[in-house]
Image (cartoon, rainbow, N blue to C red; front, top):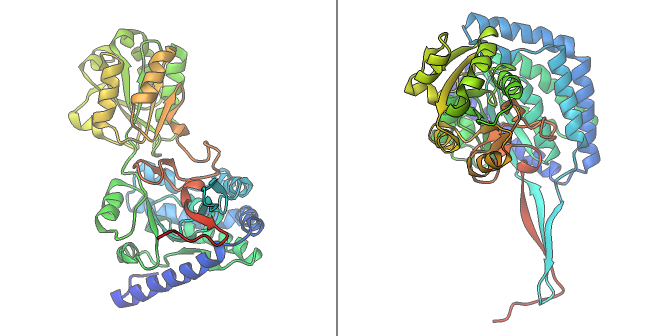
Length: 425
């Protein structure tokens, strides 16, 4: 859909908002069985339509290549049978999760006989703005549905065809369950002005969740009149403590950096204790370089690995989303934690250590949404956490932190039951 006059676009966006609000009222009290039926049917439809989805995705990829998108962006955009099957399994895993809506978080009685319960309820209508990844269409739509929320999705122009094809499978699931299609809607235009309208629609939208690059997140924070649940970027660290096992250090670092370089959980900076640098860094860096990774190191790193390029101050702040790794030798645990606090993005940070006391100190002191011991940062993912999928990784401190799954897409209300109590004057 091409760009259109501002007044027409506002009309289109407000129509989406009104339909979403009406659909959400239905979803708020929809029994689990119907929501799960919609998700399982959508999973089956994704599998049945996989050849069509791959065909339209190839058109998106061709356009993206012509536009000069990076390898990381192209990897995020690409769909094949394996990835479509993973999306379908994610929908089925979400269906298997307990329904959070209506569950009691706490319950107590007051001396006057009032019975008070804190009960989970949906957030309402959620606007999700994302780039490149067409799988977010399914992940976000399914998570919102399970938690009783309506979703308005605004994917990137580069994934428009792919996202539309996935949305059709979701709508088939909604139809089968007798639920309104407006429960999951997609902005029907690639016009960037639509984002501005969505960010101002506070009468229809309750929460905005952006998932994309730094410029998108900054725009959302600057323009939104609606509460935002987001992370700015994923500058993740892996720290090799002096007690680290060499084989584990090699295997975990390779996975953390190179399994998929374009995801937000990829390690971007490697830290290593000076006391173990000669033992650990040469084999770790050699393994990375042999697999095509560029190393940008501090002077001590460059002395140990001549193929490394000197790192600049900017490298410590950078989320490369590419086969590039910044490497620094540190004096010890305290300096590693200080470096992460100064340069990190509070996303995901890991320590490789056999010393459990050092590991527990790291886990307690590093102020990130996800902290790990002896594991790859690429496990920073809602699916890997048993959530079925995620909308994103929240790095703020309010409402939700870490993978945003079904429970994180709810809030709560207090249900008070009495027997005629009146408050004394």
